[in-house]
Image (cartoon, rainbow over all chains, first blue to last red; front, side, top):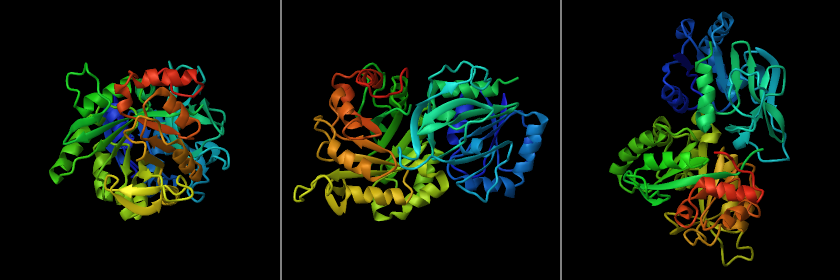
Length: 199
Length: 259
């Protein structure tokens, strides 16, 4: 199992790479577009600010990712990496996302609960999801974010905090998770394993 | 539903656990990596490793300890103790920590909070506050003071005001230790925790004073804590984070179960 992890200098890759290696994957980390041409699978991690995705445009990673997705390469975005699949985020209004999913990410509304949403929350899982195969309804995963994606077609897991939001999305060979599978214990490892074993 | 977190804390000196939760049946009960892994297996939602090594030589040991501990740990992992610069934080992240906890260095240079957050995200920066009620104040809780150097030095700042500044500078969470309660096993300082928690919008982790399951129920209720740090409680009748959480669930507190 080979997987290419994109380093766009947004936060810490160590945990994601460590979890993938723990599952037996051969991991290539790249900050440039070339390795994506041969990549078997691609993961775009990311914590922090949506504006950091600007670097994907500056380093020509965006067109390379687009081409890989068009070729059918399985792609998984984690946290900000998931939000980047959408049109954009109100966190950085001038920075477009990939637009693969034609909706906008926005901040949790103020005045209800604490923001950011930090901790273990439960999932309502669409049983047809291939990424979440074997993940039972009510399973807990670890979140840390202040912005979130809306429910839409393609949403395969819903979490609730102040309001329901997309915890996981799946469309063809493109997948995204708002939570951190690399920090979500056995459930998270199962989700990463599902991604690595996608046919 | 978002659950309340139970965080297991390991105090480490020169690469060995000196305090905190231990398991008698572990072959090496002083090995942080073995203990952290065991806690995660037994239901802890997160692990905090607090380095209390004083010497410079010990710092290299710390990075090795962090690396070994993080190796097979797949829950959030925080490292604190003695991190004074963004470069030191970066080394700890590269060794496998997900978050760093900074205390006196943040008080000495509050810009450090934003500097670390800039590179690693606000969620990766926990500001730890050691506070003690001010007996000379008309409102001892609201005026609880921040202490550094193991509680020997009063900074003159209040916990509430410093927590607010830390938030505005980009801290992701506050780890609040009540120095009045720490080590007593008589319960968390719920009033202090509630005062700080209500003053900020970021999560507050309560620390100091845990002795019984009821103490956790209190700090999650009246104390408005988002998470609670557990260390020595596991020596005194509570066998694991899992059993603690099972008891809390019976009292209607949302916790991650099964875990």
